[in-house]
Length: 420
Image (tube, rainbow, N blue to C red):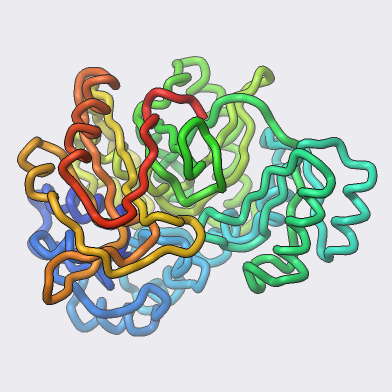
């Protein structure tokens, strides 16, 4: 089989790494890819937003299966374009991807299908939001309605913080069209969990659970990010909790989308808060999480290609997933200043030593220059490992990180120890 991976981050590098282990695969392409993938895949210089050119490439190269990593091309309708050409692709259609691309749609959908989620208010203007704050109970959470790369979430302890957030989002236009509408939610206490399944539109295969760390700094301080690390399995998972999530959240979501003529094929990611009243959905995503995918794939023993193709073919009937009992972890090495402004082009050193130690280092934001490997993004590298215990996995990761260096490198030192 010839496989095309769409994307350039750590999640896509992990997908390339896992798919390359399949005996069914003869060739992997990555568009636009990154330097970390070059030994496993042929790099193709096509942006993820250029869905026509991607479809043209898949047609010309006779690609057997395309796997979409990031949310942006899904929101642009890449699956619809490939379907119109009878090209096999893994991921939801543009309509089905609204579960992520529009938080207001997702919240109304959950309310309609009795899926537990925080109480909410949708505001279409800054005036509506500011008016709502006059009688609102704090703290509360303000979310950008559209895609914001994991950064459009504001936890506001007081009214003045909420007003400043709305000004930044809706009046200053920090997120462009994505911020023309906001969702205001009640603040929940509990522990977060990432729960991903792969669906063929009817049946689902649950993936191993994980927990990510969204805050930029230790002890869950600082601004929200796309994710600073992850562990798998999630600490709170149990058989009863698993069954509750499947029955009250995943099954109603897949059934509800199908009922609305939005048959869901691909990864459905439920970002959950485990509260005293049970699991509640903070958000749905229409793709693999990042960096959750990295820790989950480290534990997958089955052939990922069988699962991805089964989803695309609407045939997961006799396909399952086997999991390693090891615990896995991931620490993100980021550029100083992330998720705000940061420098690029910083020389990276020490990767070979980390790999010799048995770590998997996935590239998230790197580039190749004449002087060697350099930083090219906010999140630069994902350092990952699996071991029989969480302590062993994290000790191994942090030992490896001590050999990796680039100017102003930033990372959390409490991944696996603290509980977001």
